[in-house]
Image (cartoon, rainbow, N blue to C red; front, side, top):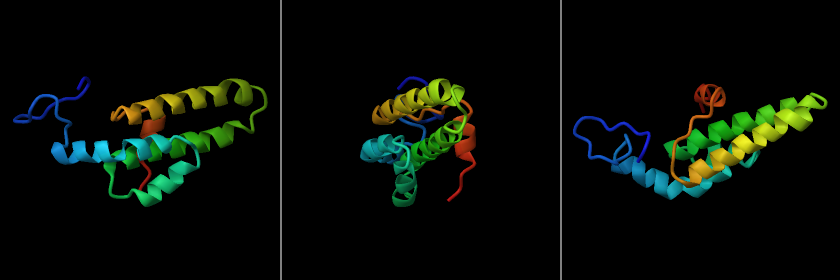
Length: 117
């Protein structure tokens, strides 16, 4: 798996968390992807508290959802430039989740990491 760093003694190609994390990713790819469909991110955060993978993507989906609401109040620039960018980033996040990858969205990922439930 490209972009992943293996710990000493860890077989090549395994996610950093080992087989338990790999099972979490396989079991929760779809729900993690759904978290990028705006308000559904809240549901995923509440329902999948035991899944590190789903929580990671749900937190980013929540930040994108809130950013979309905020930029909707900015005439023209928000409507025609910022919101489409947010939608595109959300679509990329959805695809990354379906592929089973942790993709930290620039700026959004740092804000999402601060969310504690």
